[in-house]
Image (tube, rainbow, N blue to C red; front, side, top):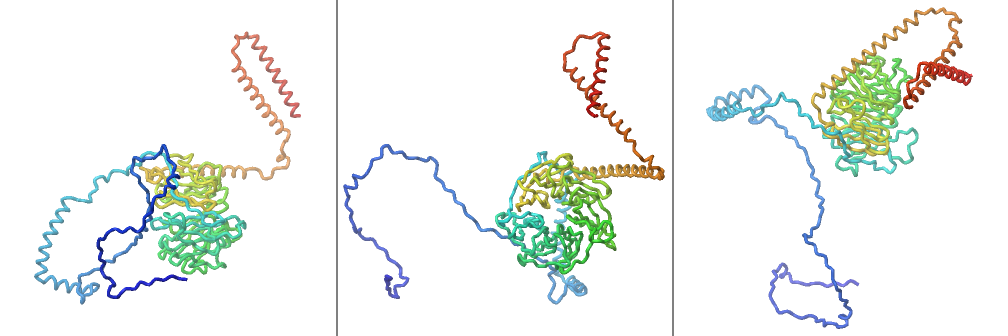
Length: 605
């Protein structure tokens, strides 16, 4: 049952002002004291009371609304013309100017403004506010400090089944975002139910990705378009090339057809420097390098087979693991293969065989990283097996500089975009090494343990201050290096250039020497008589055995004499013996030596 009470009021009293007045107090209820309750009270004696001398304060947190910024542009056009005059028509503007110049008001206005302009010109001539007083001074050298790096943020794979972070790409405008490609590269070992999504992260929000990219197959590589930051290019595990437009959402905007795509995972994708900004190329371990235009992704525009025998046979092709393209050298590109060979190619060659210019005998294993020096494009950095190597295009037989062989496998490397002598490497033990060969050549300037699992990929921000490292469990760590490692040092460019040139000259001299030795050996081999009899070619085994025995006994006697000399040094010096005693000792030693040699011969028999 619902109780309803209706208040009734006249229409004339709606909104009427309330009048308050004073009146006498009224006693509504009076509760008398109960003596029984007083008997239940317990006296507290003594009583402890805490007193705080300072003022009591409380802490409050407020979450303010995020301030959103928007960039707007203004297009300035030529104005001040009457409506009937078209400023693009030269005859109309000239006719209008002549008409205005004949007006008397025009002359008066020019005379008044002329004096003001003359005063401003005299001021500029008196003091040059843009004058540089210290042009001859070199850049200020950074204070000497120990190289260091600190962790800024950590971006973890939000999926329950963790995948490796295989590739990273910085946002081209301001580097405020980071694109991470996630996939499992263990052949046929991907767990059931593993997600194929990759993500774009905002550096200020590591808790949740800004956008999820949903490909048909897990992404191995992912690259932002440097001309259009909304467009991304990805290489899939199944060999397809995918393209996204972040303005259209998470789904793929363009996808290559499976018939004309790669047969193996796409390990390298790079945007080309073109007018349209839509051209790119990709590489895979199937031995093919393909050129694409994202406006028509049905099939590639060009295919190059990495066959160093120049027979253009796909079964002889070397699998591509890494790619390098420098915009200042638009006709050249380089490919690092899984056989450890680096291939230099020329895109403008007429035939596919001519496009392979030369090869460099790189590493004992796959070349996981390949990048030209941003200041000296002739020199490039490679990573494979347990070393990182620096090469010169002028020296093809050997690298000009290399690191020591590490205990852990190297997985990726990158040059610093600010300092020509600094590069970064990652290893399978979760270590990031920062090399500065102006400061130290044999060991890294800084070695930092980033995580416990293996590091798979590395990318340096354009300003050289921030480094992103991707690990085997999908964790991307953002690091900030000290100013000494991200600021150009005094005369560093000249020092690095002279070091590259010196090492290149040294390698050229060694190559020439090796070439001469090979020619001498070849001439000796050709000068020998080819019609030698079988008796001349037989090896006298008895002579070789006797020589080996003599060398063996010589080594043993040398060791025995060395031990005896050490024992004599440790014993206290006795009195000087007579010549007769010396002769007796020598005869005893000779007899002992003959006895030991007989024992050794018996043991050998």
